[in-house]
Amino acid sequence: MSTGIWSAASGAVSQMSALDVAANNVANASTPGFRADRALFRQELNRASDKSAGTRSMRYSLTRTVEPDRKQGQLVYTGRGTDVALRQADTWFVVKTPQGERYTRAGAIQVAVDGTLKTPDGYQYLGSNHAVLRARSDARNVAISANGNITVDDTETGQQLAVVTFAQPEGLVKEGSVLVRATPTAGRARAANPDLEMATLETSNASALGGMTSLVQASREFEMLTKVIEAFSQVEQRAAQDVARK
Image: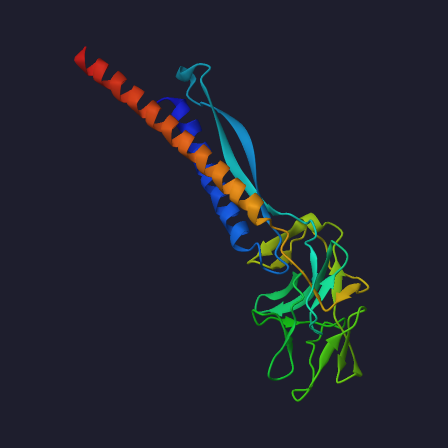
């Protein structure tokens, strides 16, 4: 079988991955705190191990990883006292999940019935002492200051939102839409001084227009590669028929 068909097939698989990434970016273009994904590819040369194959080789591309775009999203004023946005690009809020501590840029903080400060997905925000942040269940007004201090009914509670940074932020791996976890590459989370924009949210850094452009491009390249695969298949069928007639 021609090695060309394998090269085309590997390219088609890569474009399918690119389509998935672009579609996810478009779907989350309006999700506060979302970081767009970028599909990274590598090309490898795999030489045939069969000595009878001579100098034949096969070049193909593989999806290596999906990397989040760490560029900061636009800050939009909302007027809600519990909405906060991080001003510094590589800093993160800390939340408690069933899998352990995770990190997020999303600052749409909600006050649960029991007073717990949570994300829209129900994860609890942690304070500078890594304790769950809480307000009184009967609180009428909860607000967060620029330095992360929690105020309930105009009274300081002594609680402060935890904000952390990492020595190697490229070692952070996304989990879901707005959470990341730290790998050993990222290093340990280090406390940072909260520098927040009050009553403001950081919007998604994914561009709907850019995502749609990527979708169209990946779709066209996938279609082109499927035609190449079909052409190789037809050539091999004709070659097999010619051999059979002889």
